[in-house]
Length: 91
Image (cartoon, rainbow, N blue to C red; front, side, top):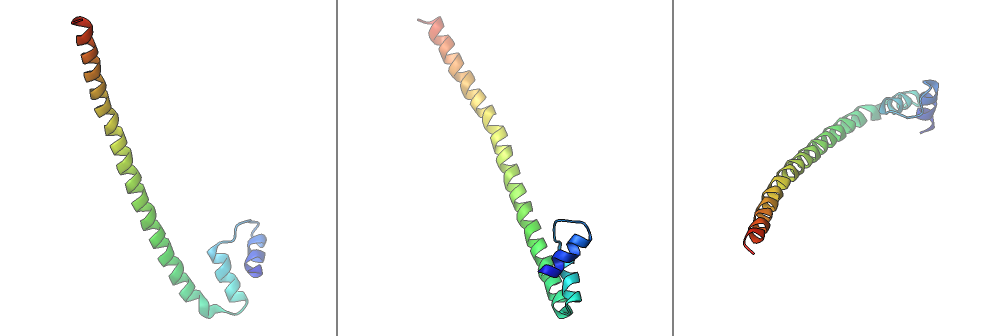
């Protein structure tokens, strides 16, 4: 949308924002689309926030699981080390 690009450039920015698009729609006399677009944008933001939250929870669960695993491996390694010591003690 060229008008949104012009609005962005006037503000000395390189990234077009949603507000730039809404303002452009007003200027080119299509204000009837703004309300439904704002609603859609809010729904998108909410879904995206939920997805990010779910992803963060998933990553946190994996991180916690990974942190627990080395402890288990550490115990296993200690057991193997004890076995090696027993073998060395009892040839």
